[in-house]
Image 1 (cartoon, rainbow, N blue to C red):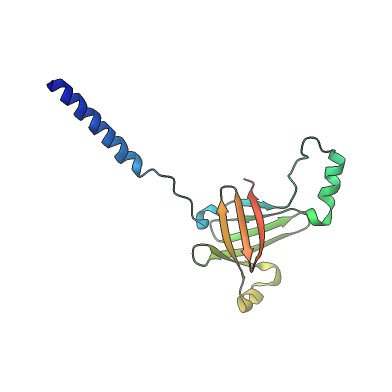
Image 2 (cartoon, helix red, strand yellow; image 1 turned 90 degrees about the vertical axis):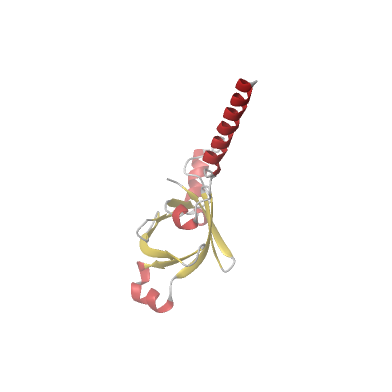
Length: 145
């Protein structure tokens, strides 16, 4: 009988220890400030031709004006890089609050952006998908690295 109680107490202590150790291990969603650090791609078309689609037709779609893809890459030091088939632009970003980011592009010169402020977007990141929204207009990007 005594051995039985010892086994029950050992099991109870083991269960309590497991619960205590795993309760702090819940997955906490990353904040946009850390989740944004990546390379993101915007555009309607995938990089490679989907199965069942004629590759020549896919190349024509890629050349169409409305299907241009571009990437935004956010770095830890506050730098952001825009690149497309035809241009590369650099800038800086900073978070305003938890889910708003201000992007200032170097393309028009820092003086312009300092005088008029950068462009502020609401940021939503879920997994490999990021949405930037400004005054009701939004763009969705997907993580590519």
